[in-house]
Image (cartoon, rainbow, N blue to C red; front, side, top):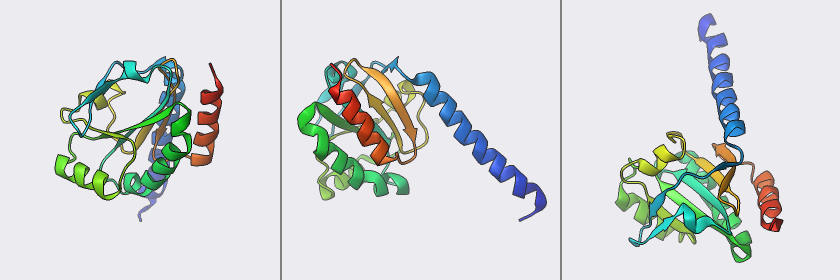
Amino acid sequence: MNKTLRWILPLAAAAVVGAGAWWASQSAQSPAPASTFVLLDGSRTTTDDFRGKVTLVNFWATSCVTCVAEMPQLVATHDKFKGRGYQTVAVAMSYDPPAYVVNFTQSRKLPFQVAIDNTGTVAKAWGDVQLTPTTYLVDKQGRIVKRYVGEPDFAELHKLIEKLLAQA
């Protein structure tokens, strides 16, 4: 690697991480954007339906290696908290072929709601999501509490979910 790239690459990586941290701090406690999610079975759910529940919204793609790798932990998180007022909505990106999403969902027996964002409208509303996975945690009042770009620290995520579930 040449000398210029040796200092540019770490600087660029730091800028991306810093920008993500800045955005996360700016979005804390902001209302979740009004959105309609079209689920694989053709039904719809909206952010209004999130009220009274702690909701994890995960933007993902079948072609995303990190998304596929974290999916078992998302399933385990969902299974751990689902009986306590917690739900998961996995939103497949607009470029993901619907047949791939259906196959992935069925073959992995995903236990939570899966939506396909055919037009990209939902991703745009949630901060113009382009990097996957991008995950939002929404409290019972419908406010975004945390945004993760990349795989979350699941131990930290579980602690935050516990705290949010305990709130009135």
